[in-house]
Image (cartoon, rainbow, N blue to C red):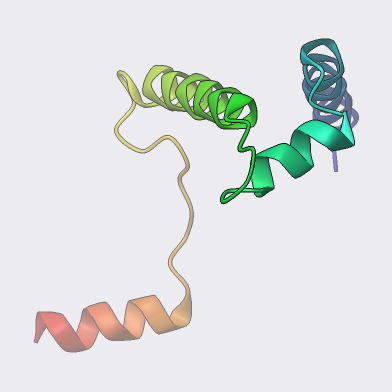
Length: 88
């Protein structure tokens, strides 16, 4: 793995952990409150997760804009065989 990619992973993980700590989501009482659906349910963690999904969606939208194939890869042997059989 390249060093630049590894640094990016550490920065992203650090930013994620800092965000959880600042928002108070590392408190076990909040997590238990979220999981206690039939008791005193605390939806705060749901909003944090919804925000994370929104940021991820925005990032993917930015990556896909103007790029037909944002993650190019080669077909595996199985995919090539299936596409050959389906095409005939």
